[in-house]
Image (tube, rainbow, N blue to C red; front, side):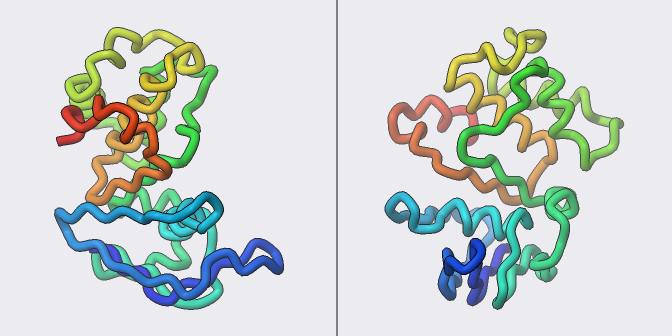
Length: 174
């Protein structure tokens, strides 16, 4: 499903990612493990099109996406929940979920929102509330829910350390 081969990413003159390669098969769970600053977030940003590799390739579902715009990558079925959640704090829970639908047709959006609410009932309770007033766990639910609105084939979670603290999320993502 995803193949990353020989990518090298730089921040100016700093060589952040050096010749990284890995594959993710359909239905497989893959974890990138490393110390702070090892480049895990940079790898995910490169796969999702937010950064560009100087060399190598990124292939998703058989298509080279190494020079594809991030919104087009989401449209192809690859969603990225960034480190720090990056939700829209001054927007409501519902508005954040609607933003996650931007690559999809408005047809079926309400059904997708209801599917997110089924996975994360707390978000339905708080649908009119500003996202910035949610607890950290609720914000994480919202970030994942927003990504799920695009109906991804592959979901990338950056820095899910919150998952090891409590496994509240596992019953919702199964």
